[in-house]
Image 1: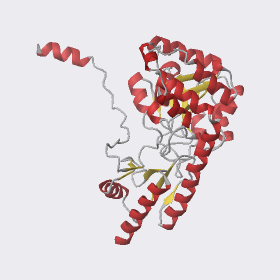
Image 2: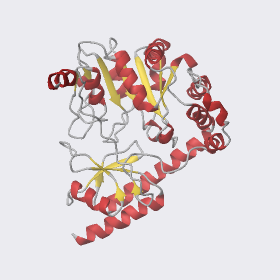
Image 3: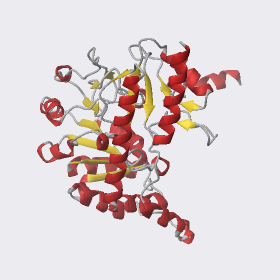
Image 4: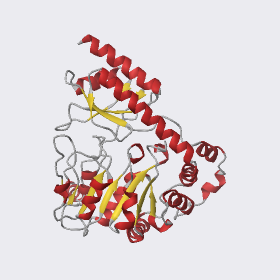
Length: 357
């Protein structure tokens, strides 16, 4: 019996999993640790959920998610056959790894970036290399000129928050005509131009975005990719070989209503950016420094404070931020922009904390 146990245990795939940000159950906690949007989604989303005919839930949802795909395509002025939708951008990214990164050559992504990337590589047994960011935490584009099995760039990057302009991104794409280049734009709406503008020029470019940040729908799990029809067909072929019904009916209908309400979407982005600007001014007054942000968070450090200790003190006082115990960034905290009231509570604590040292 023991021998048999050892045999089947040897066939278990073991990976070091991604560790998501903590989701506390206590609603009184000031939650600034997972880059969610502090405001509700578009009003049409509430109408969908309040008026949903639950009898429809006995049926499978539309596997093509046509109503949502068409609305996203219209929003970005692309064809519907250029849009792929999945269960959050993590699902879309994982499906993209499985679909496009099948070379013996390593794929390339930065050493400091979204920490899920190496997990998918290990899960799917994809070789990879991590060119180091420079001393200012910026991508060195020349590191991506070499032969590879694919390129993956988060823009803006996380957790650094830095956005690179389209000329910079296009230079990397130009130097990789034989690889699929994926630009992960989870935070693009808080930054600048999207690489979607480059898709007509590059058949090998895939741009991935999410409803979790700017559209306030992290709980609905909606992500999408935009690219050439050839790339999108390949993604759909893998999807239909894996799980045909990826998005539930409530998410499909809610996502559709969210994309329809462009004015609400744009007002929400402006509100977050205004809070970010105010936070930058206050952090500066308190002696913190931070990288220029193109996201809904700031990546901050203080030369007189130990980031890990401050993180723990904040947590004990019911203010959650994100700390990364990793080389080069272990004295930084990633702080999501909450409501103005939530940010005031954070800053009041920081002022008191600094007065004690």
